[in-house]
Image (cartoon, rainbow, N blue to C red; front, side, top):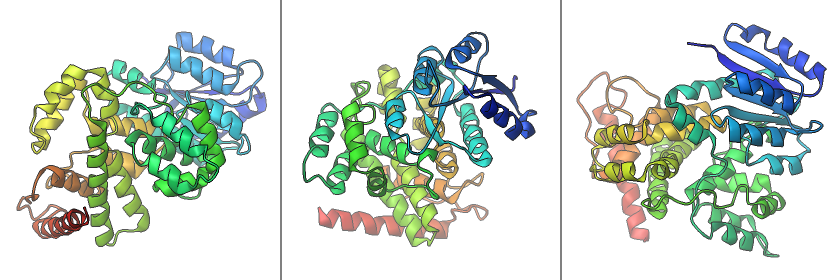
Length: 395
């Protein structure tokens, strides 16, 4: 098995020398390559399979956005990261399509190494190279017809407020992922992760959101929604699971960051279905015939139809896009076993909430060594029942 290969592209030799010094401690783990221009990088890619490319944004001739657009077309399974100055927002908007992660320049060593490591870690989730290429080729997820026009209309109103934008974003699962992906990029230099749609929209600002709507690169329709996928039901189920999981995390007294990560993992757990159902609609028809309450049978049907499970595809996409590691790990191990090998509390909460969507009550196995023991299981069932009852009464 070959080592992972990482390519750095910058027209300034001093910058490339800096990367060499910065990553000297990783030469045993990764094969490192360097190119002084976009053209040189593309020539190298003709003969060398590269796992991750990191390029400067501003370069003479072919800039970073143009280079990554070419890489996406010719080598879609290669992960694509771009380095740009924080004041360079117009360039960022132009690079939204082909770029999977944005890193601010100058980039701290631990940020750069962390970004590369997370991208490489998720590659094991999808072993099929064809499927990697399909997932890597995605610039924006499928969205319902008219969502772009709706966002344009809202963002163009003279009295438009953040709440108006949030209402549109929260109406579609893909928009939620897109806006969180952008605002959590290292380009914004935030000290903590943002899991709230309202907070993400506020940080982007109405001017940036309007520009993104005009460009169509975030709020555009993308590929057609799979013919046999009900995106409204998918969104409603995801919001319900996320609400249950957040209630569990909150009532358990978990730290605020963990509560947010639990909500986000549950919300985006089935995001990959937007892609997988479009790749193989007939396979998805077979998956839909499996009773949803039989979670392990559903998982096996997804694996047989697509070559990976839906949560694995979701985790792979979020890993490419730089989402937080606890979110990716908790998502990748779904469906989480009630008893058996230990997983994170986040994974247990999300798995439990997912079961509650299709089962009236989640039964615990009498395993004294299980973290999710019968006592905790009963408490979580009661929490979910209370929330479901209050939601039912309010509607």
